[in-house]
Image 1 (cartoon, rainbow, N blue to C red):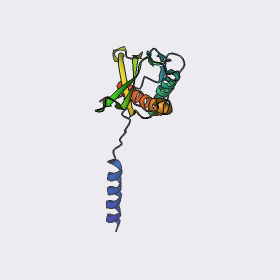
Image 2: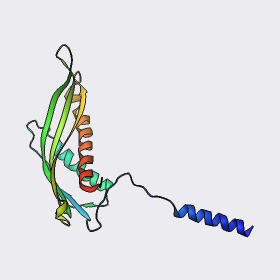
Image 3: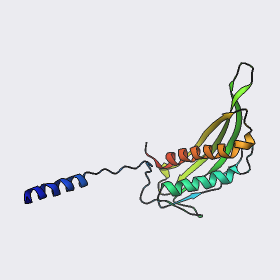
Image 4: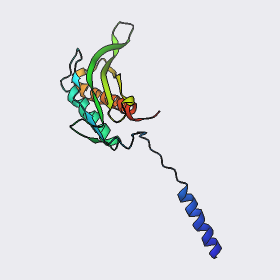
Amino acid sequence: MPVFGLVLLLLALTTYACTIQMSLKGASIPENVRTASVQYFENRAPLINPMLSQTFTEELKDRIRSESRLVITNEMGDVDFSGQITGYDLRPMAIQADAISAETRLTISVRVRFQNFKDPKQNWENTFSAYADFESSQSITEIEEQLVADIVDQLTENIFNRAFSDW
């Protein structure tokens, strides 16, 4: 029986030692980067949503907080995000035979500057756009808040992935 116990112990240790850890977040942040700063994203779009700047800026901070180990600081961080909202557009989509639009698309565009003060070779500037479609029979004022939340979620995910993920 002692041999059987030893075999079970070895099997258990082998199984335990062979576990694989996986992360769905995919963030790849160097050890020397500990803080991040997010500047206020001013709305410079021709069509203005008065809450969009605050909503976008806070959502980007929340994403960095929740999906990385970085601490958000009010001073300049080891990495810094800045930029402006450059587009907030409503466009008709899916034109029907009677020349009436069945769907409308809300698109938000953001110009982002990413600075990595620990490794300036990682700096970049890019424009990100995301959109959501809705039925033209719906009033934009009734669904705008939810559409903006969905689009901002897409934008901040894309920006976070561009800054911190190795694809």
